[in-house]
Length: 207
Image (cartoon, rainbow, N blue to C red):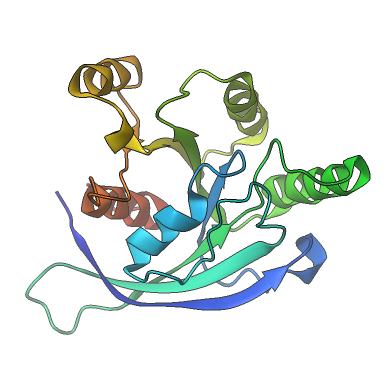
């Protein structure tokens, strides 16, 4: 299996909508899911920085589209190997943010436009709470992305807070979602595996 090593990660910019986003110069990974599922936490784990992406216990805190530039190298003995660059995009959460209905509708419109029209997205990472794997809002999100997923784009589900389950529950979840990945912020469960999958599938490497 091809392994990748993080060389650098930094915050680039924030945007309210598609028109404010930076030029599409790099392949992008879009992290999406319902509010408070752990998108910012997973990005911090992958980038090995505690506070790179701002996480909060308050659902709906992330109101902007946040861009993080990352650089990687394949784990090999070749010192001349090129640096691999890709963009992580932390998106506002779907769901139960306690804001005015008009504000929530605006967020959703901006989010839908970004997901549909941002041509440089190569991988959609859908985060799901391991304790609630069958919520309607997550099923609707999968159905929505499948409507416009192109041949050069991939989709993967990452179940967060995996450590909150006992061993029996973990095994059942893995059996129910055999193509998914599983993450725990406390034990950094499977973080290298998730990073390898993301880099490989965004840049077209074979694992």
